[in-house]
Length: 274
Image (cartoon, rainbow, N blue to C red; front, side, top):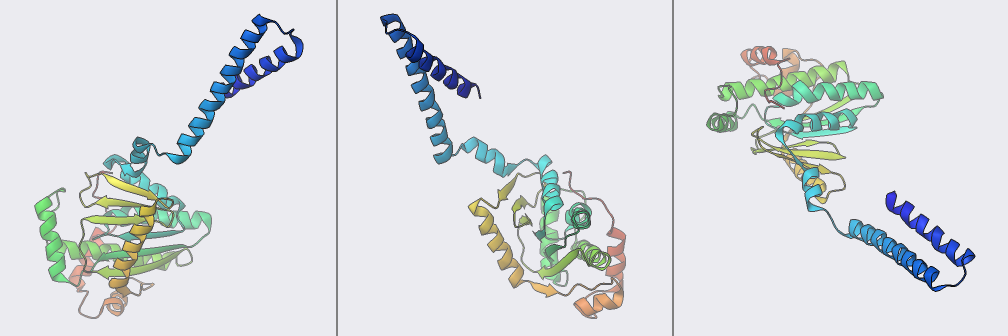
């Protein structure tokens, strides 16, 4: 703004000198000085526009795509509050059901617009993969929970029950697609078609944030689709009764003890300090 005012003022003075002043050496010298000021200012503005268009400030780009652990939670809430669709690939979904799912519900109701939600969780029926993940968490030990196979299965089921309950209560606003995967990863992919966040398993690690304009956004969306397409699709029931769970997973997949333990975990707060 200041540069524009200087250019405009100098241009006006040059024009006034040419129009009103006699052709003397002093005026010519002053006029040449002002002309050089205008030329330099125009060159500076054009150069700045050229640099801003063809070059990227690496420090700014890094700050835009990297999130410190304390900012991850707020970033996820911000995406969920504006999303028309939401996708998540995660293991047990504890943070998702405690923090993000309620925001998706509130967003859909407030905007009177259905939100498509695709959730890929660890397949709790695969005991070997649950044990493998529990072993990893025991080794990493970045929270105070004593991880074992039963705990992993219980937490996955608790997230499923919350999804079923949300689908039943808000079926006009939430279109939930559930998938169970036996693929393990230390990364989470979470977000919408407009913006995604890739986080590490350890909540103390940095996260990466990719808007739709970033080429990596499309790459991670493709990765999510590959994971989803190779996972087991589950038809989400509109009721979280034992009989409906049997219809979803089979008679022997959901033991009464597992359902009872999962119900006790529902409503718990997020385990991560975000």
